[in-house]
Length: 286
Image 1 (tube, rainbow, N blue to C red):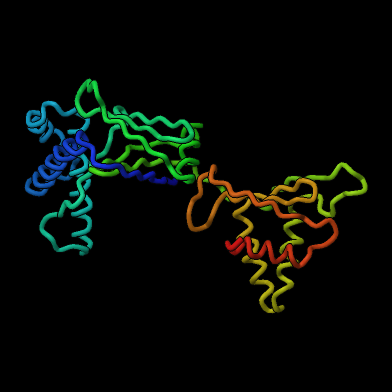
Image 2: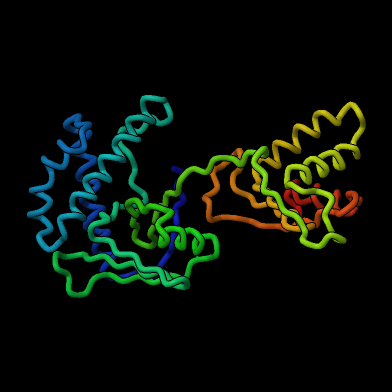
């Protein structure tokens, strides 16, 4: 399942600042303990450090203590991995930006279509939890719509002193098969379209575009065009062919990120303007 991180920045918040100062101290303590005692298991590190950290921060929610220790274990894991691969020669990792995972049990997210509100407590039974409100951009709004509709799954957010990242995972989309076409006909006998299926329309479009190239390049261009068109779902309604983008070879596109562009399907022949328009659309400049 591909994941997309929704990152939001916010001004300095007093409760978040104090929370991150405590979590940063626990994170550094975890890194020192794991490196000094040659610990690799996250559970063993939590079992060894939870009690002293709990006694040091009695007003802090237990979920934050466990998450901070787990974040320190993650830092140690990637540091050892990078050192084993020869990417670093440092003796200990440098913690420039402390972070902590937010347990989903204490994290509440509300989306009304325009504004996103996240709420999480700092203390046990916190009467005044931290409330952050954001206005996401269009790309994030579509992902949040999919999450609210049950099409995306939220994983543990990651909190820093000035930002929060919310990962949303969407199902992997299978590329559209060109052999699966949707037929469409015009009810008027005098205005019956030339193409009865989307497959016929796509075949005519590819043939029209390929003819614009030299003969020695036509097989290559035909293969490239079919590869590009495999990223789209084609539907034919009357004289209009609609291409809906559903997948890309380089990256996974969630199903709710759909881009529909209607392309007039010519009733008799493909005009040069339509061929140029489709070619520009496929190349991503439309």
